[in-house]
Length: 301
Image (cartoon, rainbow, N blue to C red; front, side, top):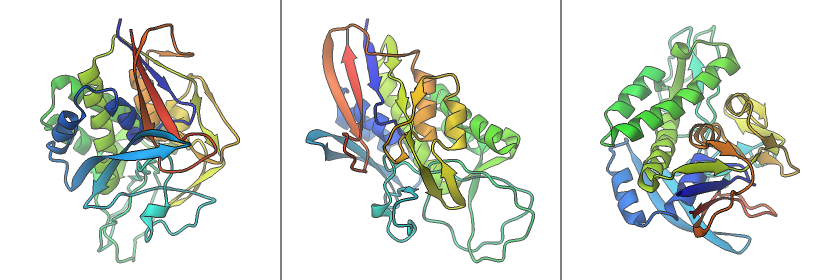
């Protein structure tokens, strides 16, 4: 039986999971070629060598228009718009802002930053700012996934994962799923992570997927519309019923995308099962902690 074990001692994000799975693939270049041929607007995915606590692994850099966007914990220097390279949360994956709209936006420039959590807020006023937000509804995302040049299995998996995120956002913010809208840039970034993991899972085709209990970290995370506790409300909702724990490490270790991917793919949570190890992959986040900031994927029989 082909078994995949995902060790989440430092939480998980979409790009960290993708990096760990990438290292298990027999042909990583073919995977990247297929992922970059999906036609996601402005998106480029590249493998970067990363070293954490002396361990060499893979960081999957997802750039939009040539720039990698990063989120920000509250103890970091809060100028995320101007210096994205200094804003690493777990990986490059960022908070997706979800909005329930009660009015039209009157902004006139498109945000070039994005965050991986889907934060939602109700507007009861007109904006007078000179920014223009571009949003995608859940239906828009489903339409985009449905037209990707991937197998039906990958489409179904990606739709299910995104559905978990949308449902969690709707629950956390008291809005129907149909009213949740995501910032366009954040949507594309998270979509690349989600489709990338789904594609890697299809290529590996494990018979069994087990994940460890998930380290959530602690503290707060700074987002464009305020400061949220760790885990963020959407993450907490997605992980309901699963084994998780907090730690002394300050920061957001598990993102909503990471949580949704683990919830969807893992059929069991617990210690590594008995198996003959065949390969080990390390998917690295951007931040440096006393512990190696990675998801470890173990492949065995």
